[in-house]
Structure formats: structure tokens, C-alpha cells
Amino acid sequence: MGSFPQPNIVWRGAHPNNFTYGRPGGGRDGRNTFHHVVGSAESAVLVFNQAGRGASTHLVITDRADVAAWQCVDFANTAWGDGNWESNLRTINMEHHGDWRNGYRNDQVLENSAHVVAWLRDQGLVSRPIRHRDVKPDTVCSADLPVEAIWNRASQLLDEWYKPAPAPQPQWMQNRASIAAKTVYAQSEGIFIVNLNDGASPADSRRFVDRK
View (cartoon, rainbow, N blue to C red):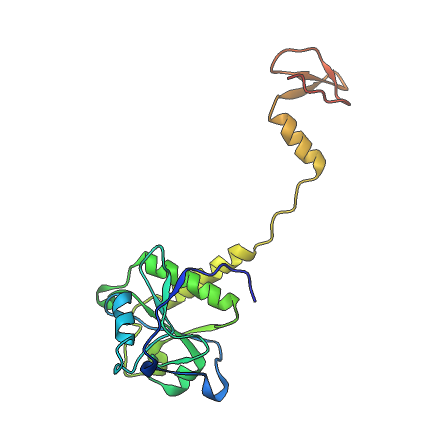
């Protein structure tokens, strides 16, 4: 398990008529299917709660700053959003808030999606993105949702999170920085240094006395 922080994902369970319990036939294979709502995230959640709808996705990415996604189906279960039974069995699928018909440009949704994807990847739950139309050719979904940009932003977030901390400075450099922040010195006449700030008498550089 990774340590990337989980974004705020709030449970909004789909109606049990709209998904399959379990993952028959071997389970997930790393797919992450991207879908697009023509409307709000909340409208998708409401649809998934209609007993006769016959559709669901695991997650619905929101346009909210306080909630990154609604979760409608547990990852251990099979959501029906892909319209392709084999793909449904293998994937974690995600709807995205917004209307794609005039070009997708909702920055909050894209950032929420990237954080969710980064967390899913860090948990070992997904490893590659696909569009809905990759597994169901008779749909245009996910239209112009910038899937690659979301995936690349998730990679950036993971790289930043796991970037090694800079090595600490040696103690002598820390001491020098601390002294330099207080007063300015210049070397003069061999082993002496002069405090240029207050015109004090030269100090022995071997002691490097701070006269403040």
C-alpha cells in the first residue's frame, strides 16, 4: 500500500439492482475507465439510485473543492458503466461532472480526478487509463475529456509526493548560514576578519566571534 493521501471520497451507494456483487472471472486487471456525464455529478448519483436504471460506475468525480468524488459501488464489486461485461469485470470506472458538448474546461473536476487517479494508482488498484469508447465503440464517451492530461497530472502528483527530501546541510554550513544572517564579515590582514556592520575591532577568524 502506498502513502499518497486519499482525497475526500464520500459514499453514495448505487441501488443494488444496478451492479453485481463480487468480481467473477478473475477480477480487476488495472483498467481505469473514464466516462463523462452530460450534467452534474449529483445527477449521475441519482440515476444510479434508480432501481430500474441498470447502470452504475464505481466513482463520480465532482466539481467541488470539498468532495473529490462520490463512490457508488465498492471496488470489490462490478459496476455496469462500461456497457461491456468483460470490461466491467476488470475495471474501476469513473464518471466526470460536466457537459462536454462545448469543449471540456472544468479545472476543479480535472484536479479532483487527478488526485483520485493518483491515489488509486498508489494503492495498486489501477495501472492504465481507457476511454469508455475503447470498450464500447458505439459511444463517443468520454468525448473530449482530457484523459491523458488527467493521467499525467496524477503522475506529477505522485512524483512530487515521493520526491526524496533534500540532504541536510553539513553542520558547518548551517552554522555559517546562521552567522551570516546576523552580521557581515570580510577577511582582512591574514587571519583577521572585520565586522563591517558596526566597525568593531578585528576578531580572530579561528574563533569567528559574533559581536552582536
